[in-house]
Image 1: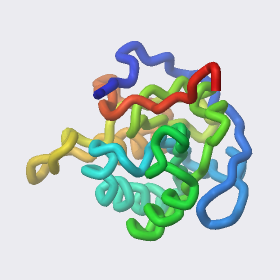
Image 2: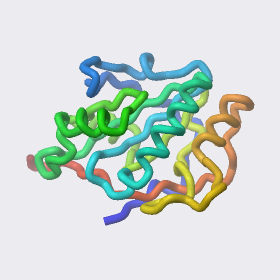
Image 3: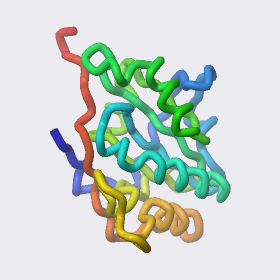
Image 4: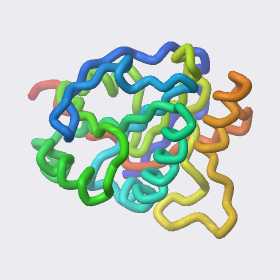
Length: 187
C-alpha cells in the first residue's frame, strides 16, 4: 500500500543522532555521515517498487551531492521477519548491486525511523550544515516510472539551495512510496 510523507513539514527540526551498522561492515553515527554543506538521510528498503524505480537515479544524485560536500546515507528500518527481502544480508546485496557510494544502514530496532518520523520508502530528509531539517520532499517527479526528459532534480536542487543560502525551496512535494513495515508491537 502506498504511503506519503506528511504534507505538513516541520522544518528546523534537528536531525536525530544514531549509531547503526552498515552493509560495508562499519558502524556509523550522524557525525560520521554529516557533510560540511548539509546532509541527506533517506529511508529505503530493497523490495519496494518505488525504491526500485528510483534507486539508480538516487545513487547518481547522491554521488553528485557527496562531491559537493553534502553527506548522504540510506537507512532500512523494515521488519525483516515479515519482509525477508529487507534482511541485512539482502541489504548488502542490494547496496553492492547498485554500487552505493554512501552507507546503507540497518535500523533493526526501528528506533531511528521513529525518531525521524519516517513514513514511507523512499522518504527523504535534507538538513543544512547545522543539521536542521530544510527539505522533506521527493527525488524528482518520477514515481514508479522514470521522469520525463529534462525533469527537475528536486533533491539535488533543494540541497544545493540549502548549501548556498540555508533556505530550502518552498514548493516541497512529499515523497510517496511503500509504507515502512513496522514490527508488531506484540512481537
